[in-house]
Length: 195
Image (cartoon, rainbow, N blue to C red; front, side):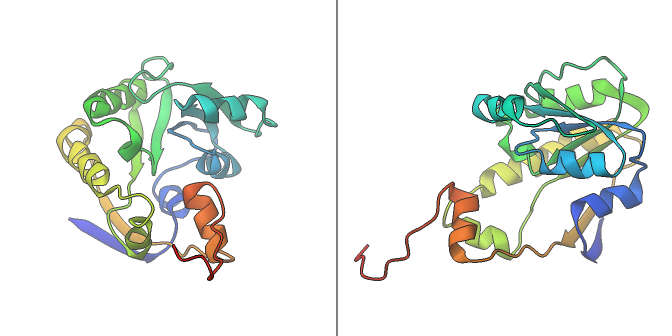
């Protein structure tokens, strides 16, 4: 059963369902560490994992974020001790894990969690932004595989499981700002260009 929460955001959904302050939480596939930062702002001690070498190099060169420790690692091999973490979060990242590593990623999450720990996976299933994103990068198959992974491997590993649906408002200053975010550079909208 899916519970509809209306308009909210991922950090508020998690904070309303789990204690974050003072807890050790992994942000797996942390990307630019936006969610790691939000977790730390809520008082968590964050272990941020990212396997991408280029992104990892940027994190090593960046100013440290208070409450966040970065480690270059993939979801299938988390360098954390058994039962050492209170929570594991995949924020828009499970669908980026190669499909053949999904089972290992969930197993690793379960391994590093304390017996009362939680797994939180934020995976966009559908919505208006996904429709627009398809013009740049269609990830429907990867997202469907991630959802199947959760049903097959994650749900049976926990005593309690819940699925929440909610909508977050995302505002961009312009189409160029949006395009820069999703394809890495601004789009020249010169209308005289015949392309």
